[in-house]
Image 1 (cartoon, rainbow, N blue to C red):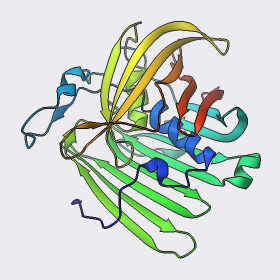
Image 2: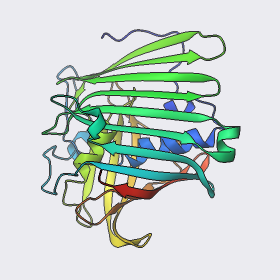
Image 3: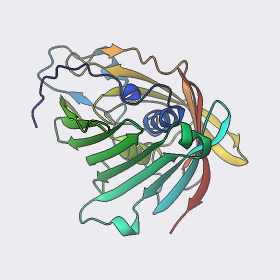
Image 4: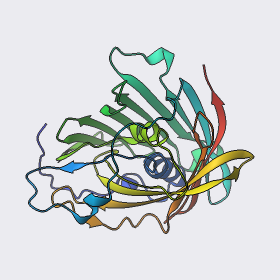
Length: 299
């Protein structure tokens, strides 16, 4: 897939839907920062780039850690915005039995607005990720997002030296669709679910710092993660992580501000064999957004 020029601007995915849709913002913020915010690859840039970026020296080694792999698991989260509890729901399934495919490890998720939030801001989404079953490196990612005015379909394909993405936006009233193709020449790059699985495998000792590059949809990011320590959170032993992020210019590899976050986000992982997310909190430009674990089961 070759990159194609587009006459329209390339807005952030955060503006792909109306900016006054808080439920959509909670889902995308949680999935983009919280899931992303835990990852770890060491990256090499293309030989086509003349000068290596200064931040390359920060990047962490990509080796899978020694922490036990996550067994097939279903996680259910409650989404909230500015204190409005139960404004949405999010489910993530690791290696679901009903979605097996030879030679790949499947992760899928679904999310939607609920109650009054659904009446004011209808929104639903589904993600599908295909990973290498040994290294948990991404091969293919697909997402579908729909609100009251448009739908967005995104395909991301990972290659040894690049990431190719195709995003199609359809106006639900007119039926008009627009497609945008992008190429990010950099490797290795992780998606949101491979990031989650990879980071939880690391030591995560207090003070550890992890820097990584991810391309969750069509925009690449540099994330910096710091292990703040162990504590009890929501009644469970937890590992507290601080997460910051910057956009990466796909052509120059220059870092650009990420203005949607007012300050570093916080993620708590369970301090046990599972190491699943307990809660994510971020102070975003729309206000306080949270995703809180409400269910954790092994089918």
